[in-house]
Image 1 (cartoon, rainbow, N blue to C red):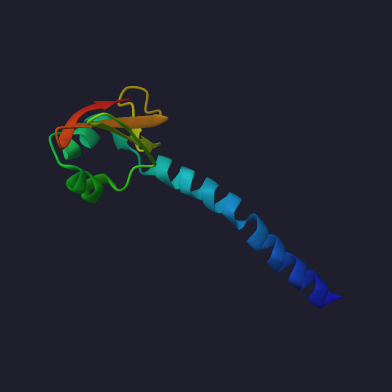
Image 2: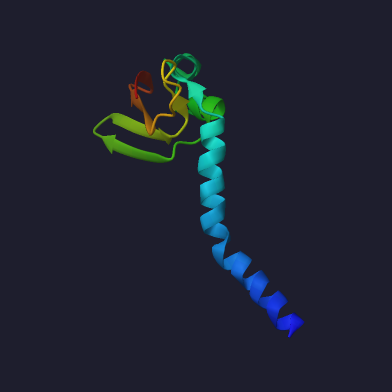
Length: 102
């Protein structure tokens, strides 16, 4: 009986792990969220390779013509309210960051 309970517990942990891992990642990201100005200062006018080195890979990307849109979820926070932004959108044109939208 003990063995069955242990096996069930182990299987349950592995079954639920992706959900807990995702929630942990979101909470961890929010704890490490940068102020908007600090985020912008790290990446403005930089090429994509340097953006990745500075703030990591984007959570999602989109392309429209020659413009790329990179989205970072829970990576920044409002300096006035202290609330974490849902997303920071990095706009890449002509091979460098031209704008960041919060």
